[in-house]
Length: 69
Image 1 (cartoon, rainbow, N blue to C red):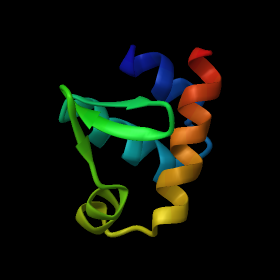
Image 2 (cartoon, rainbow, N blue to C red):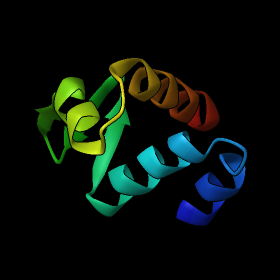
Image 3 (tube, rainbow, N blue to C red):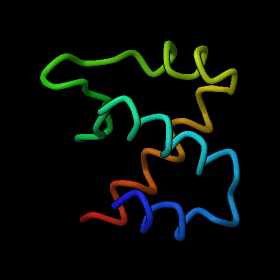
Image 4 (cartoon, rainbow, N blue to C red):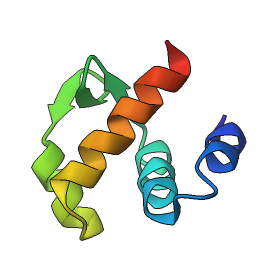
């Protein structure tokens, strides 16, 4: 699955990096929120850990949900 996401986001290097980090850490996107198993993860914490702004994380999450809905 990561190969499909990498291909889809090949023109968006920052969003591709977000996708890779979420996938590597087992974090999923459900209903506009981030989850590690059943625990909700703060979008701010993810943005801070990746040293990017929250808006980019939100946009990436929206794209992920559009791809799989």
